[in-house]
Image 1 (tube, rainbow, N blue to C red):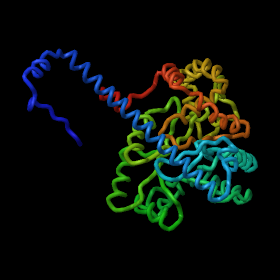
Image 2: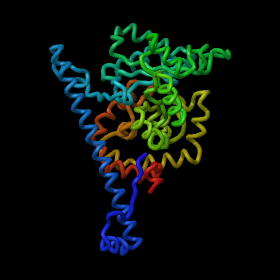
Image 3: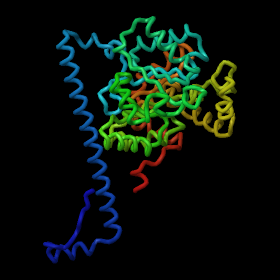
Image 4: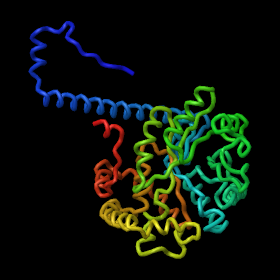
Length: 383
C-alpha cells in the first residue's frame, strides 16, 4: 500500500499563505477533481490494456493462419459471426454464448430435440456446453456425450463444463469430499487436472470470499487456482456480477460464466398472462418459480419489462435478445449460458450477438434508469 504524505518542508512562506486561503469548499472541489482524474486515468489504462490484448490476439491469429496456410475466411468466428473471449484471464477461448442443459436435457425435452439444439449451437459457433452430474440424475451428461459421439465433432473443438456436488443419495456420493470426486477442492482439483481428467476448474455459486480463499490456498501450496465462477446474472439479479466479482477479475483473473440471462424464462415474455402448461414454471419441481412469477415482485418485474418495449423497438430486436446482449456487455462476463427447449427459441437467442454492438452507453444508462436497480459499486460506496 502506498501512502501520500504532505508537509511544509521546502515550501515558501507565500505558498503556505496561499494554501491557507483555500476554503473548505475549494478543498472538496480539488479532492473531487483529483478523484475524477484518477478514475479517468484508470479508465484510459483499462482501455489501453484491452487494445494491447486485442493487438496481441490479432497477431497470434495471423501467425496461426499463416503457419497452417489458412485464411481468415476459414475460421469459425468469421463464418458464424460468433464472438470468442478468454475464460477469465486464462488462455482458454470460449464462445460468448454457451448452451446449458439444466432442466431440458433428459427432462423437459426429448433426446431428438436435444440433438437439434446442440447441432444448431455448434453450427453457429458455440463451443461451450455446460452440464452437471445432478441434471436429470445424470442423464444430461450421458445425452450430451452421446450426441457428441454421434455427430463426430472433434473433441478439441469443444469446451465441456460439468459441476459436482449433488451426485447421489449416499453420504459419500455428494459434497466435495475426496471420496466423491477425488478431491478436497483446491488440492484435489489440482490432482484432477494433473491426471488429465480436466484442463481447468472453476466454482459455481461461491461467494467472493470463498473464491479468494481458494486462490490464496492455491498460491500458498503451489496448486492450481480456479479460473471462473458460474453465477446467476440477468437484469433483475446484478449484485454479484457487478459488485463482487469485478475485483476478483482484475486482481486474480477469475472470470464469470453466467446462467439464466432470461431469469428462468421470466424475461422471455411467456409469463405475461400466467403460467403456460408447457413452461418450466409448470413443472412439478419448480413451484418456487411459479410462486415467484405470480408474486407482487414478479408483477413489478413484468411492468419493468413492458417499460423496456420502446428500446426493444428502437433496436429492432426482441426482449430476450436485448436481455442477453445486456449480460454480454459486461467486461467480466466470459460467456452467457443459454437454456432452450426448442430450436426457434435458441435461434432467436443467438441473435443477441448482433444486438451487442448496438448497446451504447446511452442505451445502457436508459435501461438502468428504467430498471432502477443498479447496485452501488465499491467506488460508489467510497465517494
